[in-house]
Amino acid sequence: MRDLGVRIARQKLLRYRVPEADGARWRRWVLLAAAAWTIWALFLSDHSVTHLLKLKSDRDRLSGQLVRAQEELRRTQSRALVGKPTPDMAERILRERHGYAREGELIYVFGEDTTRQKIR
Image (cartoon, rainbow, N blue to C red; front, side, top):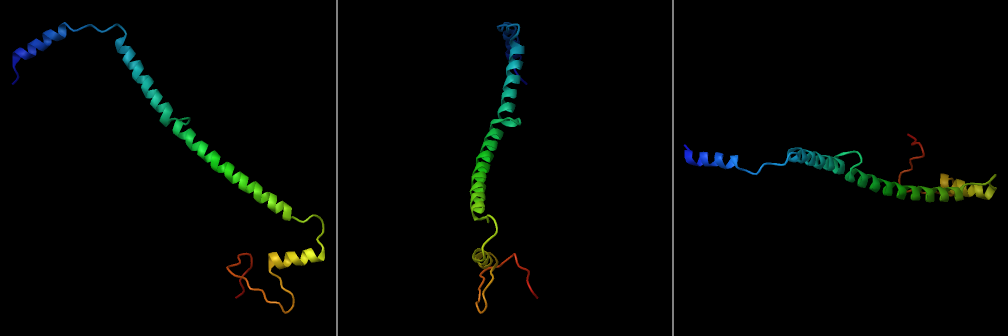
């Protein structure tokens, strides 16, 4: 069991402590609430710093994809035919894109061609 004298001395000292200001308790609660809101706003909300940084990285990645897609579109549009193709152009297109061959000519296709149906 504790010493009774020490206990009584503590109670006497508590009686003479410096009184708190009238609004000190409320100010602590307001400060705690403001700190909690700041933590929520910085890290947990939909507009948090972490979420905004993730959105920025997504925007940068997508802008890179947009540049690559626009370049591919320009290349495709430059290859597109304007008007009716000449017989030489038609033959070149058939040979390059579709693998057609002249009589007596062999064409070797390396890799798998997914555009053709397999014959059984």
